[in-house]
Amino acid sequence: MVTTGDTTATRADSPTSAGRSTTAGTALEAELLALAGSVPDPELPVLTLAELGVLRDLRLTAPDRVEVELTPTYTGCPAIEAMSADIERILHDHGIPDVEVRTVLSPPWTTDAITAEGRRKLADFGIAPPRPAGPAGGPISVDLTIRCPHCGSTDTTLLSRFSSTACKALRRCESCREPFDHFKEL
Image (cartoon, rainbow, N blue to C red):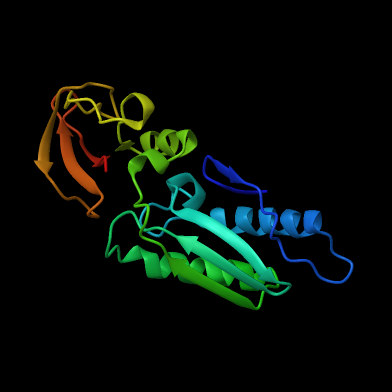
């Protein structure tokens, strides 16, 4: 099985080599996926690529060849190159000489791909996490209140639609007066 984020898929087509069963190939894929998923996001190093939900898939296509699929948080995200290079480096360091990282735009990434642990880490880091989608992945609530990650107040003001990255907005809490980033819902 290969697990990406909250998705689990059975790989009946896992390659085998002399002395390696399909189960062993699957176990190696899971190990390599965990390694690739442990890479910190270059813009938000408090999160791993797995927690951010941008690591879509990893396939072992030959004994020493891996294909990885990444989906950027938005089209044109400059961090995708750094993510790819970091994944290639960690897999090379683990003995995989041939690593291909491909950018996949469909289906597009949404903030629903951020894991619960990723959301917790964002809040602990002082970034208001994105609000989850409505029931059954439906629209986000019309309620526009954003909770301050410092004091918990919902009395916040938008200062700028863009912050240190295009994925975040800059807000200020009117209660504690602290500025903070809000990871925008997509």
